[in-house]
Length: 64
Image 1: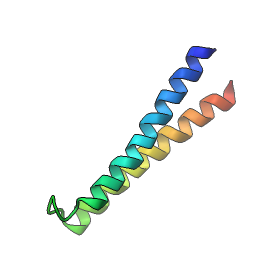
Image 2: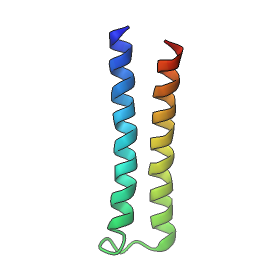
Image 3: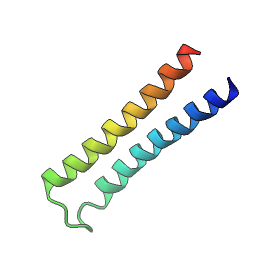
Image 4: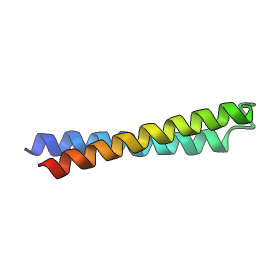
């Protein structure tokens, strides 16, 4: 059971990292010369990934 908790925590950490990546893309959009649509796509993708990972890890812990 402790291994399952460890795996869920690592997945949640990846989800938080995806949220951080979205913030970095939003912050650096001018430096990387991203257009508005490209910035929105990257940010939405990272937010969707982060939300999915966090929700999945939380549901896995609730199941325990």
